[in-house]
Image 1: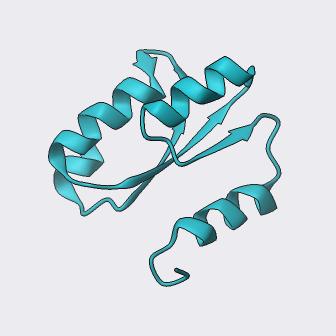
Image 2: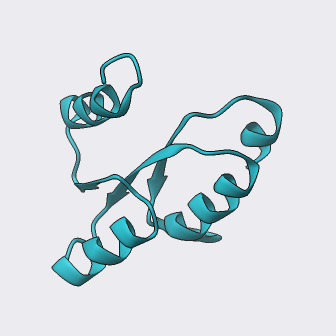
Image 3: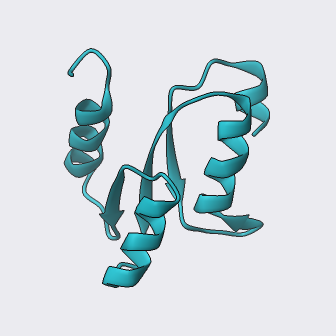
Amino acid sequence: MDLAHREQVDLAVCDICLWDGNGCDLLKELRKLRTLKAIAVTGFTLPDEVEDYRGAGLAIVLPKPLENSELKSAVSYLSPTQR
């Protein structure tokens, strides 16, 4: 959140299980500042959980463990220069 207050943030990569909350709540707070796209990274990938993440506005859900190439592909897909 500190970075989002100082910089223009267009894309967030959110871990769902954070030490001080969860990625869905973080995205909700970030979107109070500006519109942005978001990717979830999580070990919790049951179908109903993934549906909840997407309902919260996370465009892509990537399961852990995660390969660097998977994250790069997701970021590229959501990048405005790629659309």
